[in-house]
Image (cartoon, rainbow, N blue to C red; front, side, top):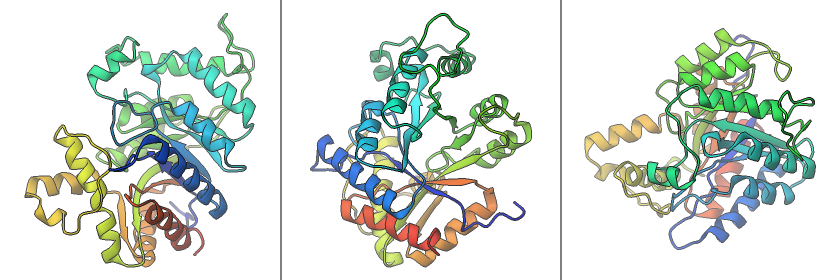
Length: 335
């Protein structure tokens, strides 16, 4: 993008609230708050949590509850959902939840909405919301939710709290569907390039080319997920990254588990098709020292024109994860 400095892009945090081997959800929640407090001190713009269900290694199932925990333990950083999987919920329930969060922490809450269930088919059915194959149901639910949060809803029901809540809504996606919807509604768009980068460039182009200004947003705004594993050396960072590599292999082979400890040399033990899978899903990733991370981030932003990066760092050791975010900030934002 003309005039776009790739090392002046705002940085935010996507915390998948990892449950590591040998730990429990309570540990995950404590670590998430410590990470949010560090991100706030450093200057990260926002801290998002994602709705997942039935995942042994992810603790953010009750996403709105966890957002309240993080917002209550911080003061200035924006806290939100990246995202709420709207097919699992009625729009009224989400309007009430996020209206409540906005009332408690005014001006600090974001609401990202996704179309996927965030779980497997069996767990989705157990959530007790009918899952429709009609692709128009998600857009209708988004519009209904936006109306419930507006100053003067058109529908008879009211979200209390919720009506009039100034909660920015984002559309999340990993395909062209979300890009089209975000553009049509004039909403900011967050693409899940940190694990599903296949249609990233096409989705960005479609969103920017078809964007219609709205009361919330005058021009397109793209946030992209980006994995970073930062350490003092490239070699140390490469070892840290093996935890998420193992997690993806476990997930893709039907064995989801808690986040495993790093395993030096892990990638070299894998057959070629598995290496290719990892290269694909983790193609939007920086692994290395601050200098390496700085170069990778600059190249990624220059290529995509991202308006903001959502950094995720699935590192087993909590101290090393905090250090990764600190080094990333020093390499990019503080440079």
